[in-house]
Structures are given as structure tokens and as C-alpha cells.
Image (cartoon, rainbow, N blue to C red; front, side, top):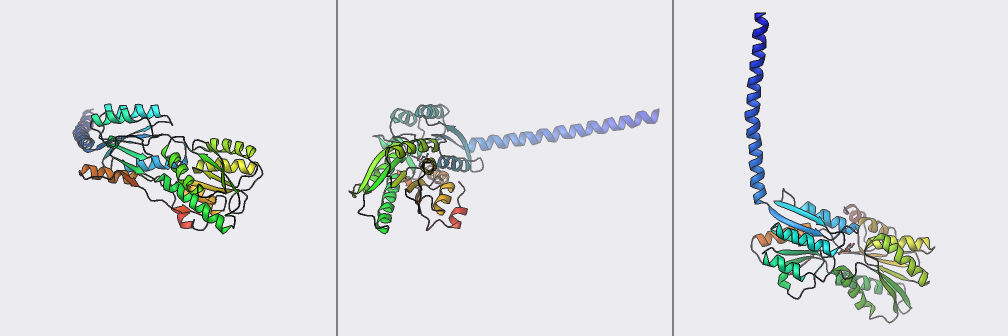
Length: 341
Ligand code: GYE
């Protein structure tokens, strides 16, 4: 009886000591973590990003690039918002970033116009605004700090120049060439620039007939729908210029369903923009004739710009990302293997 009691007393004592040790160390551990989190959170740069939507493979890659750049490890706290193609949603997101007093606002403007008031509000609040991918059309350029993106007009010119050369090679440079154009979101920088760039080359060729330009909103579904109407309306299309790969995928489906062929050995030439992995595969197998690359990996460029601003260095008004042109000749296994999106 006595032995049994002293045994349970020992066990009880041991349990008590262990619980006390656990409580002591446990609480120290937690305060350490809390303190650390507190310190890092205060040191972190808060960035509000308003992405315009998720309409294309390019856009998904662009979003991933931003999310991979503004991480906790890199010293950032990212507030990310997807505007689902609506300017009013972007305006709301930007205003909420202002009221949260973020350190920087980054946004990819769905269209170029209509931003003055909100940018004025950000300026008054002393929050620097960085444009990503697309540009804004404002009189007062001091309303934003800089823009990281592509030279869309140059991309359009590249498409035109490629067609010029290709027609010479095919000995068709004096033949009448029927062209249709699938354009992206109306009023967006990428649509405006790519249209204008291609147009400057097209103007020099009296034999290039632009039969019709129609908006297919940078999506595959719309691309297919618009291409179907083109095919019904125009029986003799020679060239399709499609302002992004997603619309191209839809257009190619429509063309194939109509019984016509595409690409290097087909009867309709395909000129596309973006150069996402799926499209590069189609360049490699000759389905797409040329793809004008548009680089969505803008996160690292944005990081560099913010580093410069933090160091109070002057930044340029525009930073262009690097871009290539892909045809069956230069889409190597290395290019395909290195493409993550
Ligand atoms: O080409 C398209 C996307 O603005 C560069 O937007 C961007 C364009 C890109 O939806 O796929």
C-alpha cells in the first residue's frame, strides 16, 4: 500500500516538473517567434498589386512572376488583387491600397484611359505607382514613377517585317495578300501598340489587303468565335495575325474545323504574339509560322526598380523587357525546355 502510494507520488512529481519545463520553454519559444514575426513584418515593404485578370497563359505566367518576386524571404508583404478584366475593379483595388497605406502600388492597366483621378489620389497620399505590362494615357506623367513592360509597337513591326521577308522568300511579294487581324482587349496598350506597329509595315505594301480587324479579347473562346465569322465572310484568307497565343489556339481550331490548313505547309499563315510553351510547340511542328515573344517575367524587373527607389536612385520612365522572335528555324529543344509557362 505504502509502496504503491510513493510510486504514484513520484510519477505525479515527474509529470509536474515536465509540464513546468514545457510551459516555460514553450512560452519562450512562442514569444521568440512572435517577436521575430513582428520585427520582419515591420521591416517588410508592403506592395499592393492589381492584376487586370487571368484571360491568358501569358497573364498566368505574369502573375506567377509577381508572386515569386514579392515574397516574405525577399522582404515583401504582397497584397494581390485580380480585377477580372474590369477597370472599375482595378480602381477599387487601388483605392483600397491607398487606404491601407501600402508602400508601393503596382498595377497592370486593363485599358490606357481613365486613370487620372485615382493616380492623383495615390500621389496625394505619397504612394509611388509603378505600371506593369501595359501603359496609361495621362497628360501628367508624374502620376506614375515608371513602367515595366514591352515595346508593343516594336512587336507589331516585327510581325510585319517577318511577313515582308517571308513573302519575298515565297516569291509572292507582288501577289495580292488577304489578311485578317484578331485584336486583343480594345484600348489596351498591347492591342494599340501591336495594331499600330503592324500597320506601319502594312502601309508600305499596296498588295496587302487587311480584310477586317476584330476584337477577340485575348481569349481562346473569342478567338475561335471571331475566326469562324471571318472564315464565313472571306473565302480566301492568306494570313491571320492574332495578337496573342490564346486567340491563336481558338483560331487554329476554327480553321481546321472549316477544312483548311495552317502553318508552314498549310494554306493560311499564322502570325502570333506571346510565345507561351504551347504555342512554341506549334511553332516547332510548323502549325504557327511565327511567334513574336512577349516576356511575362516582369517580377525581377519590378524588384530591381523598387530596390533603386528604396536607395533613392533615379529611375527611367520606361523599362523594356527582353524579347525574341520565334520561327521553326530557332525553336530549339533548349528554348522549349527552358520555357516554364
Ligand atoms: O499578350 C496577352 C495578355 O498585355 C502583353 O495581355 C499583355 C497581353 C498578352 O492577355 O496574352
